Length: 156
Ligand code: SME
Image (tube, rainbow, N blue to C red; front, side):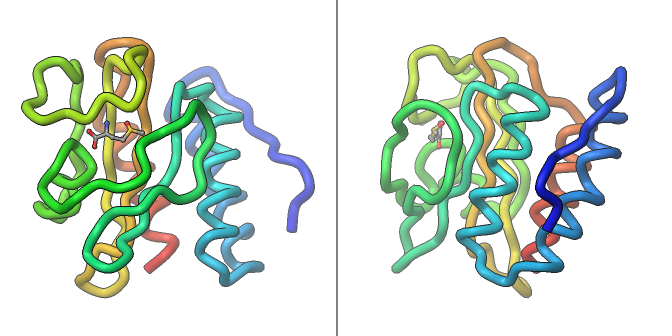
């Protein structure tokens, strides 16, 4: 496994481009989901300095907090609840430009302003979600969606 993360670029697109192959080799070398979720969270936090980045895993039909980087977070989320539970139920990525305008948003941190949640599939089933919070409004766009879906796809 690479010991150092090397990311460079002048744009979000370029940063994701240099980050992605390193995540691919990380997951090629390790089969444990929790270890991989931990390293992906660390790499995304290191690269983009997100307020909160981490995974919730589907355990007994509930989302349970998994590896993350950032402040304390709520531990369990039911299907259809909050942005995470909604992305799980709909089986699709949700971008929330302003969390105040998302009905049922679960505020783990009052500093969070915008959010993206990407389902992690194994086969046709959602086994986890990748959740990222920003302390700024309108942080996430189609570039994040594209690359984060590719990153979530590494668990397939
Ligand atoms: N805001 C999320 C809850 C998880 S925290 O952001 C870490 C939601 O509404 O599902």
